[in-house]
Image 1: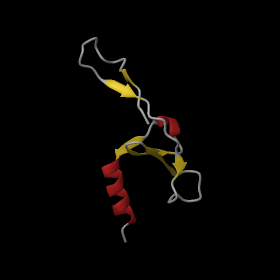
Image 2: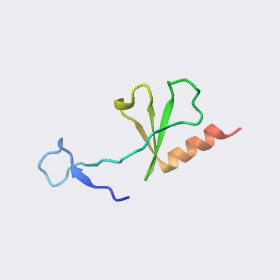
Image 3: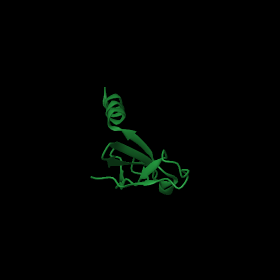
Length: 79
């Protein structure tokens, strides 16, 4: 996947500025969520994963780089 970056609208006209890219994500209900409607959703990203609250999907998400996501999964799934 090739990301298309654009200059942030909050950046000044200087040469050094912040660039942002939209990362399309397809969220799915976590397999560890209960049968209720309120659950955690997860999405695979090219550089890791993201989680969000299914009750408030438009409120944003928390992205995690691959190394942090892997460490989280190992600690969460360890006996």
